[in-house]
Structures are given as structure tokens and as C-alpha cells.
Length: 306
Image (tube, rainbow, N blue to C red; front, top):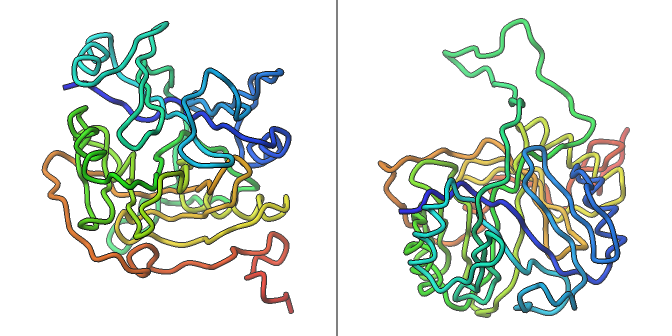
């Protein structure tokens, strides 16, 4: 089985390059290249976020109109992993990248991972019976600096076929909404999910959101408040997902659908048994603030500071 280490690159096809440039810089990504073809960004650990024009011939076809993700490239540990993946799926090789389409029509790739280790750490919490932070206050972040792209969520009209396809590549089922949604992780041990496939009654294909990992819940809040101060619109957040335990903040993105800051997700092992859940709002969010917090007052936008 191939050793897949997570998302290595996300590529968007967008109409408004300028808006995406402003958004991702405010979001905390590093702009490393800019020319007539588009923009290249990186997270702290070198995970790439590419922004391209929608008619770029190098991109796989779009599965929905407008700005959206056109390709997800996953990183692997070694050359043997690429060989195993090529044997497991119909993928073409060019310049060290295996590429093709998944059954949902989304561009898919695998390459030797270009991410690198980073010396960053989240602030531990003091819980009853275990004080992990002594003589040290918790931080206040002025903005976020995402560490990596942690997961991506797609709408699908082929939930079972797409799930089986990824399982054949080595992905593991973490949890599910039977007949509606599957949470998948790319390795036996790791975060709760790297990929979530969601089949709604409309049975459409497209992007739901791209999620960026940050250090801790304090950075989720700091990042969301900074984006609010920059004028970007929050869809929902801050809040907490009970299924994965993660803290989140979702922002509307000019690159398509939503971008999420998140932290403190559950970590699973090969001993984990997938759970079945009935889809309902309180399972998406135990609690959440619709529309986010005002960047100046730090309160809900419907309220005013006294």
C-alpha cells in the first residue's frame, strides 16, 4: 500500500486573479510566484496553492461553472509509492507527477511530497487534571499563517464509486453519513479526514471548501478576525465540529466556495472503527456564529459595542 502523506498542492481555476491575490495574502499564504499564467502560493510547510485562469489548458476540466478547485495533488513518501498508485489506478505520468481524474471528475495527482518540516507548535490547553501550560499565557494572534492544506470537501453524485476508488488507493473510512457523506483519511494514522465526499439530494458535483490547518484555536480566532478587518465575508464561525472535534472558521472565497481555518481535530489510528451518523445541523456544528465576528468589536456583526 502506498504511503500517502496528505495534500501537496491545490490548484484553482478562477475568473478574478486580482481578488484571489488579495484574499490569499490576507488569509496568510506566501506569494512565491506571479506572472501572466497566474499565482503560486505556499503555506508554512511548502504545501502549494496555485491560482490559474479558468481557460488554462494545463488544468483538468471543471466539474462546475465559475471559480473552483480543478486539481488536488497528494504527496507520497517515495518512488515505490508512485509505482503502487500507478498500478492501482489509470494515471498518466509526466515529470514525476501521476495525474488523472477521480470518478467525481475532479483532477487528481500524486507526486513525491515537496512539503517540509516546520518548527511551529500550537499552545497547549490547561484541562482539569493536566496543566500543560505553566507560567505562560495563551497567545493572541494578529492574523493566521496556515501550516498546510489539511483537507478538501467535494460535493458528489457518485458517493459509493468515488469512495471505493480512494479506498483502493489506500484511503481509510473514518466516519460516515450513510448514503450521504464519507469522511476519509489518506493514511491509517492521522487527522480525522483529508477528504470528505458529500452527496446532497441535489446530487451535484463541485467544491464545498478547502481547509487550512493552523496552530491552535487561538489562531483560528485571530485569523478569522483579521479577515473580517480586511473586509472578507464570513459564512459561519467560529464554531466547533463535534464529529472531528475541530474548531473552525469558514470564509467566502473568490477562488470558489469556502476556505476554512481549523485546529484541534481528532487523531485516529488503525484501531479506529468508523461511526455512522444521521445528517443534522448539530452534527455539523455543536455551536457556531453565523456571519462571524466583527473585526473591530469582536462581537457578532448584528450587535454593536456598548
